[in-house]
Length: 391
Ligand code: PHB
Figure 1: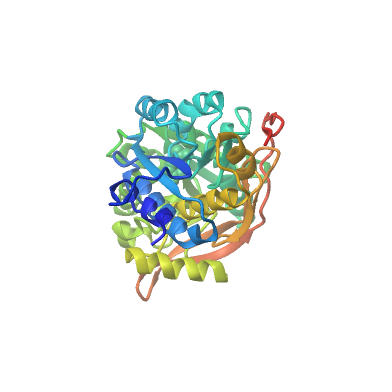
Figure 2 (figure 1 turned 90 degrees about the vertical axis):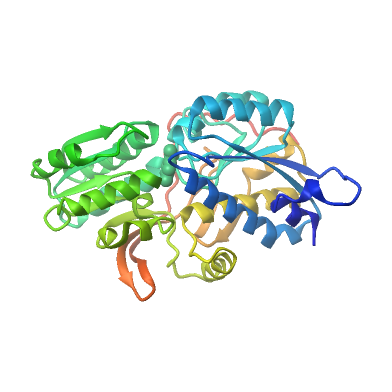
């Protein structure tokens, strides 16, 4: 078994053979506790699968060091400092929360450590606070929600009430949706932001939405908050008169079964659904399902593609902070989500966005794709990308 695969499985350091330095030291910085813990575990599962599947394309070996962000910006900053200064990692992969990404951005940029963002959509990290060291293999908050504002207006929805957790991702996702929805003639008749990681009872917020007179509700919630929100929305009996829409994290395949029937009929937009029809996705769904016993979610594909990007970079001969940063911004491949590339102006990913409805299928809930919206590069949003680092 190649050592790169053993490293992915966390076994590299326990091998009973003379300790050989791995070629590339990777810091995996993810939430393994807190409201996004399941997302962190899923990204790691996808990352390990990607290393195992594509690792054979290079002789380079990877040592993986994992740290828990706890979905806490101060805790994550401490862990990033440890990985960068003490462990001297060559590259970091991960970050789920936009708040955490905002907190570690300056340290990553200042230290010149490449970071492959495997979730956090914070628009600023590929906008005004962009960096040649930050490359995003996931999505940006604006990218997912902008197309949905236009699409919903085109479906004849005239008025919307919005809800989201009160932190960077919630604000950015709702702002992006509202911008295109109103530009297309729609009206936001009310909005609220719920305390992040603290709201268990959405009842008071749902009562406001119900009395707003809106045609529909549009939200961003993820992880444990998404499960609670969708179940409570259903138990309030709102879905029939006030259909629920959102960014697709709301009904992620990762936890849609925990929502059960409450998720049926919810329509959302996202850069990935396991039902996307292409050959790379069919192979990915088969291998991820064989490995874990569940279909992959957007979080799994982000980890998988992050591993592939790392391997593509390593294949160019890059093996330290500078050369890896430079190579990562130039990767491009067709993966399970379709055609994708990195925008050199911002280092953000360019990819299609899919509108899907959660429906009952033969083996439980599934994602029925209603529309594929074109891949668009984000506006540069004030990003002044420094000249590429020298090789
Ligand atoms: C974010 O904070 O950027 C974030 C978190 C969870 C998601 C999506 C975005 O599912």
